[in-house]
Length: 304
Image (cartoon, rainbow, N blue to C red; front, side, top):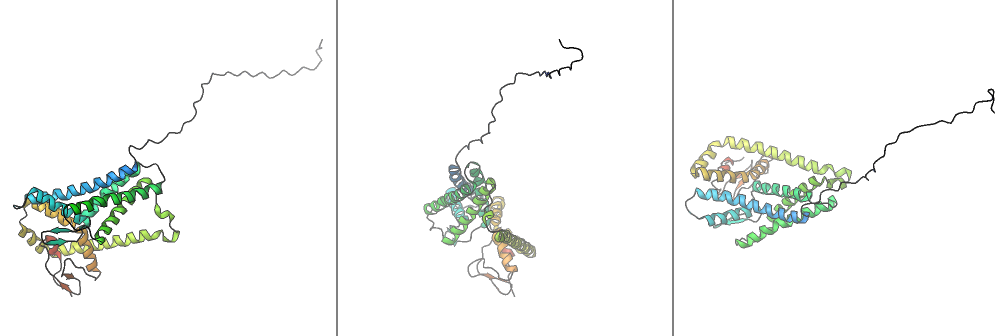
């Protein structure tokens, strides 16, 4: 028997813990991205054709509005003229009666390019592949898909095949629009692959072009103000009416980028040639036959 003087044994520590039955933890699942509604290839082809069709509807519709203000001609004839003007805006040239037109109205072309840009963004949202491959594919498919109906329409209406310069210029413009739309949507910057010393070149070129645009816009505005009386006289002599005036306004807006480029070239001293047999420069000006369009009223009549 242990005595009272014997050492006391340490009592073992007793810990009481209350536990609650735990539910089985669900294994974490990664949320998969939504599957694309359609593939990027179908979206790119459909977008290119839709942009071409929307551009034709826009130009043909404005041509019909102008036809409403004219007595001669028919609705089908107005559609044929609208188709030829749409081909002109796509670099294919146009033949109206005995007159051949080759000057591309870049204002209309830029509107078409904006449509291509938006459809390229939609096609990029349907892609789940590598951004670089998807952007290159969308750009190529949309450029070819847009050029196909232009060439087909030129053959149907009896136009000669588009000139190489005009077709290449417009195709490059549409390719650039498709590339910008797809790359921005995919968050892909192709300039990252360039060496560090040349990454600033695209920004420098863009800055120089924007400077030219600002300079040309200022010069064109000043010339329109200085020759406002001539612009008003040409507008009054056409007797276009309300419908014809609307069509005439949009037609001149279509050539506004061309006029800005001409004004910038004139300001820099090189000058420009608005029509065959006409030269306009600060040192020398010789005007031939110009269309009776109010915008041409701003052309200087003398130089030097």
